Amino acid sequence: MTKQEKKVVSQKELTTQLSKIRSAINLKINEIVAGDVNKEKKTIEGGLDVYSALKNKLIADSQLPSGRTDKDLTRWFKTTLIMALTGQSWEFFTKPVMKKTELEKLPVDQAEQEAEKKLYKVGTKKGRAFINFARIGWTAFTLDMLYKNVTDKSGRLYIKLDAVETLFKKKQQSFWKLKLDSQDDYSKFTFQDMLRAYSTMFGKKRTSRSNSKLYNLLLEFLFLQLLSKIKRQFIQQ
Image (tube, rainbow, N blue to C red; front, side):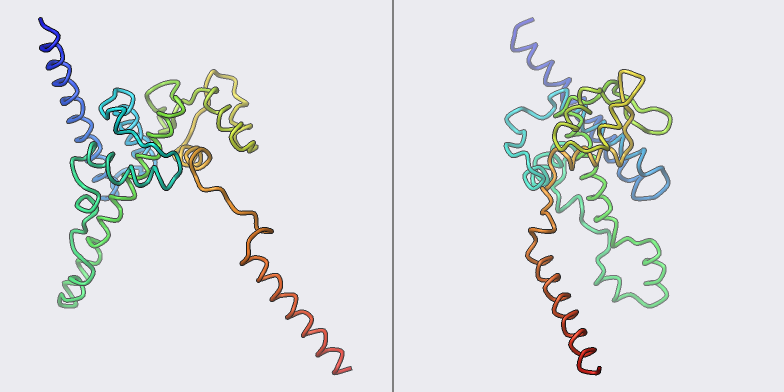
């Protein structure tokens, strides 16, 4: 077999893998939107699909995001990643089954029935589910987090302690320090833990309240209100 033939076979395998992951992701998102499953457990599983796609290089290195901020990554999730893993653009993927303006034009009884189905919110729910898949999968991939590429019965992930150490070093948060206190070679992460890990590594830096202009203006306003109240009490005396 020539090198060119091997390359063709390899590309065919990648295409097959990608097709399976696309089907799995779309199925999980539809199940989450329908509300018939444990949302957090199913989202973790969707995150594993994204992780597998990245780990198996179903997305070329040249297509990976150059930026590492939440803004950079979200833009990439909504363009390159969603097209690769669903075969659809963000706009088409999140398109509502029925627009709210269309709902308002229906007769009252029919509008009530359609409102109960919340068809106009389907697109929003699908988009939110995909972004959560992406955040979990990307975080697991970039930190090489997974001790096992499966979940436990509760839907928690097995996370390497080295990855937890990286999270702790990033912001010195006691939450991650507690996660390091494990009798095993791994820690277990829930859906919320994974989103917190994403926020720790790639989220926006929080502005200290003492440095916030709005906060300082609020303090000044409250101080003036207090002074005014004291003056009124003094005059009344």
